[in-house]
Image: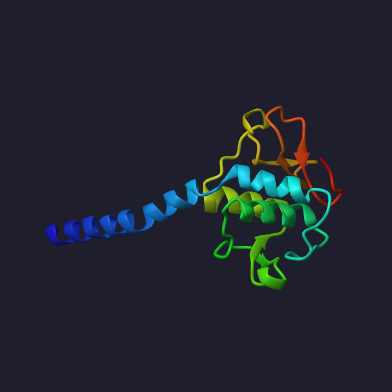
Length: 150
């Protein structure tokens, strides 16, 4: 019994000290400002030199902004290749529900109401079928693709 308790304690310690730091760093590595700058630069045209464009471009664009903000989707379920050229092999998420799930489960993003959103955060609208990026503190402007908009 004592041996089992010691083994369980060691297992807990290994899991805690090996995996919790990486989880914490995943939670802290998103730079909203860099994501917002990227979105502001490409909201009205695709960055087609580095990324492919497809029919679900709002989440492709959201993935690109998240990548600019430090998110790495390479290990996320539902990832797909969105890069080309020198970005070939870059993984992103295409599909609103997949992107929301990946951000919430893989990167500790909080699902909250629009009132708490900050510039660089993602907003899901149009009855859950479109994603945009908050462009300013007033939350009156958003960067989005599919129908390029600000």
